[in-house]
Image (cartoon, rainbow, N blue to C red; front, side):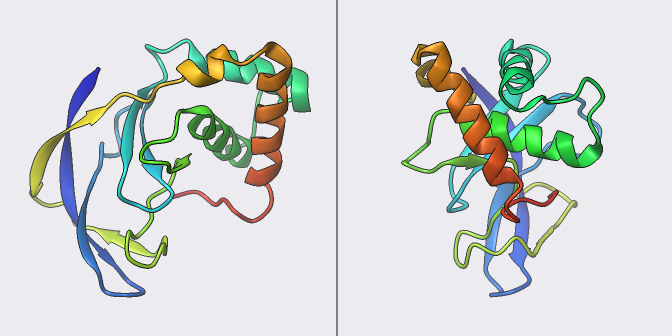
Length: 156
């Protein structure tokens, strides 16, 4: 399923590149954009409508003892895992963070003025993840959790 998202002018503060990325704003609870690791692929994810959020949370509880009342840092890491379980787009791992498509920097400035375009963005797919046996799913979420704590992730 596709969703029409607004794309906003964005500038990389490290290399000066100008590009457009989708943004949902600050007030949409439970809705996310997963970003491709090279910065030019995007997927929409609605955590409230999808059973994946709870499924992955349950797996994390079994795999790493994910707490019932997580800290904000643990929630950020959880988002990393949920994005990482989604199918790759154009061979890019999905992340819960924006990156510059030119230099991969996260030091970005998004213009929150008028959008530059409205574009269709596909919904994140978890079909490949769900097709894995339960033990592989547990292993994958544990590995992604470990990666999220190795200074690879900070909040967007």
